Image (cartoon, rainbow, N blue to C red; front, side):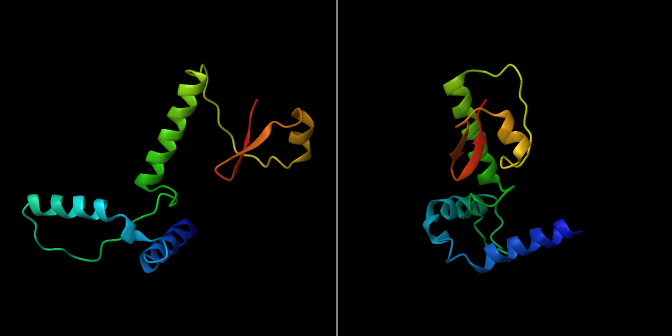
Length: 115
């Protein structure tokens, strides 16, 4: 239940702060969606259009960006034999002790552990 509340508040913030996230810059996206609405014959628009930023976790633009990032890694390093992902705190002493120095880097502001 708390996840739904947090997600609702995040969506409400995005809806109320379209000027802050500069949604007006996505004019081409808005035009494409509007053109699609007119071709379906549904001229009635209910509600208000809200542009989700690419930073909104779980949104379609965010998922597309993550996919593109993953494909860039594959393009640079080749196809993986195994795909393993885990979440941890790289500041934990056990992790710091197990890794050689300078294996923690930053990608887009996030810490990434390279093996």
